[in-house]
Image (cartoon, one colour):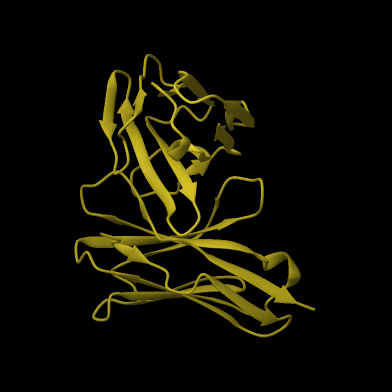
Length: 112
Length: 112
């Protein structure tokens, strides 16, 4: 049972435009969400997070939006740059839990 | 600088052999995790540890074991390697459950 789902395996965006990556979750106990970025032959690196008490968190070009009623979060990258081409993983954790649950990942390609 | 390192980076082994993948972190984190990454599945948790002498099974633990004799290391052992265990393995550590995790560079394991 996939508790965290990224339904788009890949996304292609033109440089300078907005990239929107989506993530859905099924477990209502999840209350903290993170996005990780992964380049080929490297480990994932933390990008941005959001607590369920918020509906938006910004860090430079990256913004994460959380819609608790829809159990949906999204990562916006504006403007998209070639260096943003990577696989993005959504992850979630619930109260009292100590381990992250990851989605399947979305491969983002930024075209010049 | 603190870091988390995995060895080897690449390994080819034969079916039925015992294999151990090393993970060493200098963050002094209590929490350590092993994930495998497979196409279409994202990152799936194999085993995790909250501290010395503590180990727990994740969602795909069959055929794997870990031991935690000190804070820095969490080796992952494949008791009898199978072709289904061909994958990329990532070790991670975190200070707090609800904080970001730091990942190693990964070990690409091929079982032939």
